[in-house]
Image 1 (cartoon, rainbow, N blue to C red):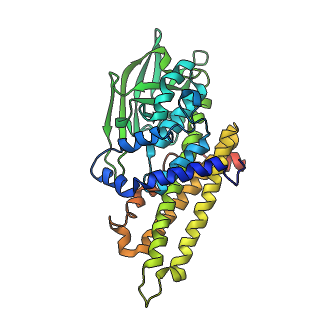
Image 2 (cartoon, rainbow, N blue to C red):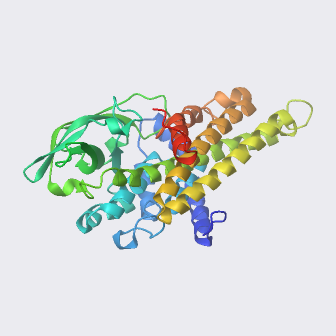
Image 3 (tube, one colour):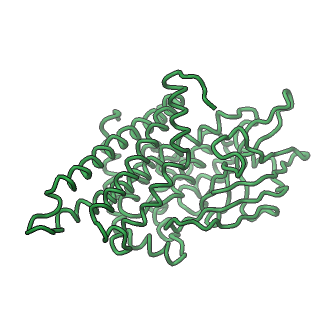
Length: 387
């Protein structure tokens, strides 16, 4: 597959997911969210159809594809009104890390369930006092015989209540230098000392956010994923997919908003019988949104291709750019959709207003636009570090 055209297999995958997601639709998704219910039936149906694990190795129940494939699934779901946040987390972050760095036993234990949706796994890195600075993470892991003892706190962790386990980023002490280094641990959500509380959000989503408390949680030796001494390399193996998936999530939502706005502009008439879409004040902002979305999708495709080719550094740059461009495109598309619909744009009936908060969050999470600009300034332009 080139960076500019998707393979026939990817195109067919998109077509199939689009049809599948359309049969569920935005009314189902937002209806569940507003009722305080979960979309477990949709999640399991995704797994049954092979869409959740399309990026995971075939020998562990996956589809044997790349991250670009699962990103395409995420985008098409969002474009049909079913933006599944846990798709970013469970198969893309956790699945990728375990498939790449886990032992054979860990792969056999976790990947089949992640692929079929029966073993959803959350991801916990953000902390109250660390924010965008992952070097300030204070959740620590210390040895106690052959076991590990974890202690710390995490915040804005998605879908903990729907997950059987969480992949937690902690820090262990390097016995040679005494410095703390990041390590990854699989933690059961029902482990003694592991507690979580929901964070009230103005976000219309069935997938909730949580504060997580980890109070001397005891874990067996095989809870550690990967090499204890690999440090930051393994962490970024999960963060690059996170950015690419967030970009796909954003462009999918942007497409949904633009589709609604375009349909409305073709039908709505205010002056005589001319549809409002004939007026350049309406048409140009929507055309601009389409251009921004397509550019963001292309950068996302480039990032996924580089990641699947094993170019971690190149993928890191492209993934950050894709996430930045997609968040901007999504915010702009939704804002223009609301403006196109006028008063109808802020009603529940038309399904646009709920996207305002969802897209605004995309400029913040999983990495803020400012930190992306810092990354590009340093690594792409070679400018001095500013923080």
